[in-house]
Amino acid sequence: MSKPNPVSGSPDKEPATEAQEARSEARATPSAPAADTERAVPATATKQPAAEGPRPTLGRLFLDNLWAANTVTVTVLAVLLAMLVGAVLIIVSDPEVLATYSYITARPADALNASWTVVSEAYANLFKGAIFDPDAVGFTAAMGPISETLTYTAPLVFTGLAVALAFRGGLFNIGAQGQATIGVILSAVAGFALPLPPGVHLLVALIAGALGGALWGFVPGILKARTGAHEVINTIMLNYVAVYFLSWIIIQAGVQNPNRSDAISKPVDSSAQLPRLLGDNLRVHAGILVAVLATWFIAWLLNRSTLGFELRAVGENPDAARTAGISVTKTYVLVMVISGLLAGLGGSNMVLGSTANALTPLVIAQIGFDGILVALLGRVKPWGVLLAALLFGALQAGGNRMQSYSGISLELVTVLQALIVIFIAAPALVKAIFQLRAARAARLQTSLAKGW
Image (cartoon, rainbow, N blue to C red):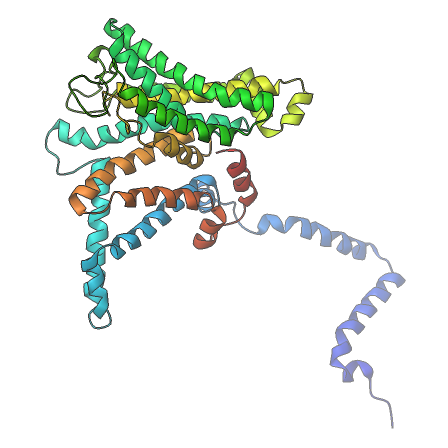
């Protein structure tokens, strides 16, 4: 019996056999066309990527980058997440809406309609109280929301800059509350105790508040520089000292209002008040302009000046900065002094502006502690701090109307602020929820550590 042909009887071996025959023929007769064929293969391979398709358009690149894990996208989505969680809290806090969920399986439309009504009404009033009310009649009513937002924003810009500047220098200034308290005390005393002309009186009162805050920042700064005492402990303790000092000085002779029996000081003279920008019927004052100017100055100081370079170098690596010849001791003191000065100006706005015109135990509110949130939300960058303060001011102004018209607790606005900061501080969570592209994840983590 003749042996079957392995080529024709084994289909699996046919490609290999043909390839072997081609290689054997090429070795036997290395003709020029074969060489040309071999050279044509890499040439074709090099031209292949060019034929894949046209380059993406500018609009396509913009959309791709828009849904990447960059700081702007994460911040916007963090605000959106906070509002969604806030909507759930609004629904839960309303007994009438919760009652509709007891029979949701029978009539789900009732629960959905009631939930949408209470949430939409609450956020509509938040918008109307912070930005614009479409139903407003007249200039005063139309500009009232913006006026309130800017009024609340001005002091937060100063305390936020105070915390951010110290953070860029490697220090965590928890004492903006105490520094602002000393600033408001000295500004008020200068405002009603010194008989000066209008322009000079305002300038002296502002300088007095700034110097008070700078003094209260100098103490933890020099302790940190000379003894290594931790600035967090020192500033927290100085907050208590400032608060109790305010409570004591209000009731002293010469400071307390003689016509009042409660703890309130004499009113600040009109010559020391910051001028109002939109008339006497609207509260927004020139403090917001001073806040913008201070933001520009801090941005210039950090990015354009020698002191700013030394400050950032010490904040990044104190040992390396010391090796390079930078005085870490001097830098720590200057950082805390300038930080306290800014916080003192924030306190001055609380009594020289339109928020109050006299000292009370609660005159400073929580602007120092809110400044920490503003600084973190603004990525410890000056212009980021300004935008974050504007957002917090809008939430505070809109929260007042939301409480009055919708019956929503004002504490819910504080919860919204906290949720925004929580989501900002957890970019991985935001990225996972919204499935953001991870192309810029490394840059995002760097921005969270070093700023916007």
